[in-house]
Length: 338
Ligand code: NAD
Picture (cartoon, rainbow, N blue to C red):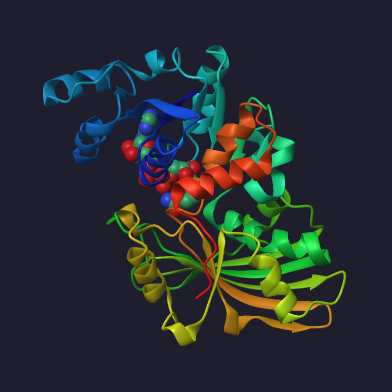
C-alpha cells in the first residue's frame, strides 16, 4: 500500500486526495492545511489533518479542529508527498522532502526544473518510473498533451500552433481578475509551448495565451501539421481509444463551456468535475497534413487522474496501461461520445 501525503489542500489538493482514496493500492496518511477554515472542517471528517507549521498548529488547537501534528511529522510517515501548495512554494518544500528521503510530486505552477521529469500519463509515464521528483504539468499543458499525443502516435506531429483562451481564475476565488477585460500574455510563445515540450517530443510549438473573464474552463484552438495524411474519421477513431478525451457535438446542445460543465454535473461526480478533455467534433478540420480543432479544459480537475498515475510511476510501477485503466475505472472515466 503506497502511503500518500497531500501538502496544500486547495483546488487541486482536495481533488487529488479524493481520487487517491478511491484507489486500492494507495492510501492518504494525511493532508496539510494552513488554516482551520470550512475546508479543514470537512477534510477532518475524511482525513488526518496536519498543520503546516507549529504556529498554525496552535490556531488549529484554538479553533477546535484536531490536527495530528505538523508537516514535519507527516513527512516521517509517507512514501510520497503530492505537493499542491500555491505556485512557487514547491521549491522550498522540496528541501524538506529531500531531507526526509521521501518522493514528491509537484504541480504545474512550479518550474519544470524542480523535478527530474514532467508528467503526463499518456505521453511521459514510462520516463517517470522510479524517479524521486516528478511534476504534473499544468491544466493547459495537460489538455494539449492529452489530445495531441494520440495524433502524434498514429500520424506523427511536426509542429503545433495553439491559441489558449484562459479562464481568469477558479470559481471559488473572489480576488483575481480580469472581471471586465481581455488580457493577452505579451510573451511569445507563452510558457505553455516550452512546457508541452517537457512531456511531448515536438520540435516546433507556438502558443498564444489570452485571459478572459470567466471561471469555468479554458478553451484551446489548436492547429498542427502531421507527418502523414489525416482524415476526420481516422482521427476521431484514434481519440476514441483514449478515455480521457470526450469528442462531443454542438448538436447535442453542447455549444459552450457552460453546457459542458452542466454535462459534467449530469455525470454526478463530486464537485461537478470534468476530468476529460472535451473536443468539439464540428471544429475538427483536416486537409492533407493539416489538423485543426477546438477543445475545452476543466482546469480544476483534468490533472487529477494524472496525479494518481504519477504516484504509481514515481513508486516504480511500470505498467502504464494498467495504471491508467485502474485510475479511469475507479474515477468513472470511460469512453463517452456525445
Ligand atoms: P489553491 O490556492 O487553490 O490551493 C493551494 C492550497 O495550499 C490552499 O489551500 C492554501 O491555503 C494552501 N497553502 C498555502 N501555503 C501553504 C503552505 N505553506 N503549506 C501547505 N499549504 C499551503 O491552489 P491550486 O489551484 O490548488 O494550485 C496548486 C498547484 O496546482 C499550483 O502549482 C497550480 O499552478 C497548480 N494547478 C492549478 C490548477 C487550477 O486551475 N487551479 C490547475 C492545474 C494545476
